[in-house]
Length: 487
Ligand SMILES: Nc1ncnc2c1ncn2[C@@H]1O[C@H](COP(=O)(O)OP(=O)(O)OP(=O)(O)O)[C@@H](O)[C@H]1O
Ligand SMILES: [Mg+2]
Image (cartoon, rainbow, N blue to C red):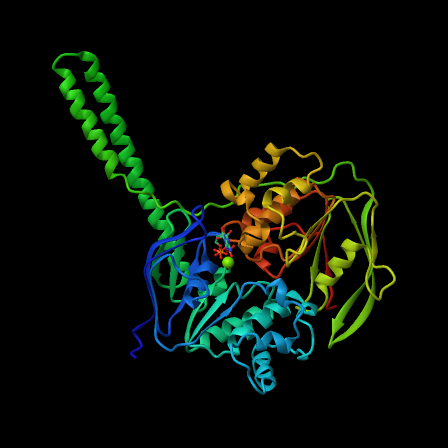
């Protein structure tokens, strides 16, 4: 087949999760062979769902999804499902194939090398760090050597070296690839087209050009439409005013008034449907637990992992109110483990890593959302962290995080990953913690929301520990102290 031929084509495709949750409405687009495309859209718009439709894991309500005959497709999923966390590395890779693969071990080694991960095949998936799990996800798609590679938020949890490596890999990649990601520089390095999924209209728009160009095109277009409508609104008002003026004169003048009104209606029709730009979450504050005095947290020891060996180290860090600590170090060194042990008040192997002042409420944002109960509805999850359970307050807070309408009665497990993140932030606001522990809080979150989150963390007045692999995000947050686990 020729290079220009479409490898995937959507024709009038409609899909919904039940009547209340329309995702795509008569969507059309096509992806040419050899291109690298990104899918943009609000958290919960249905980007991951589009991947499911392409692979055939999900069936469309109507329309045609045309995939070139005989090609193979593999997805690097957004997260490892909880049911696969207890598999060994070997079992995890075996599950990528419908048939039994004999002699899979050398193939596993080959892809693990591509993603720079050193992993014994009998190790349990759960035991890997977030960044290492991200590498496993990527490798699980690459091992299938697909004609069409689908990557769902592949940079989440990856450290700087990991992102650089992946970027280079994708620049050199010769086959067709569709990527969902919220990291602009990463996308800009290799994409040559964008599919924009509009959460309001359920339509997909296709743009050519690199990522930043497309973002600019979209913004320019929205501005132009806004200007045109403002002009029309002015003319409409003038016609209405004149109509009222003549109507009051009575007699013949009523006819003139009628014409004026008709003219206003015509202009009304001319107004373009402004393409509502995806909204950013409302600016917010995480209130800190009041009346805390003294040292909120002591960190006296920690454990790091280097070349598969644990090393214990002593330190002396004291966090008081309004002090922000940044925890640094490459993937797999032990950042999340340290955060976990601080939250629990212990460190395995080390007698005591530190102590939290008694009575301090700990707000813990986990990388894998494991503090969220997936069977709870959003409503239950938000109410449960509140000291005084005022439904009004809860709903008002939730709305700021774009958690509205039906979403509030959805089970957490059925939310998109980004929506889970927004729920986790709404919980922190309602909880009013004295100590805030944040592990990679930008994962899965739409790029428009990230500056709003940075601002809230910057202003947080309790004690805070932050882990993040996104330098631009960290640069917007006041940091008073740094603990580099590598040093
Ligand atoms: N099995 C399901 N049942 C009901 N609703 C679902 C189901 N899976 C997803 N949804 C809903 O469909 C919408 C789209 O989900 P999807 O995961 O495709 O979004 P997304 O664009 O990938 O978001 P994110 O950027 O947060 O990853 C969300 O509102 C989600 O709550
Ligand atoms: Mg998704």
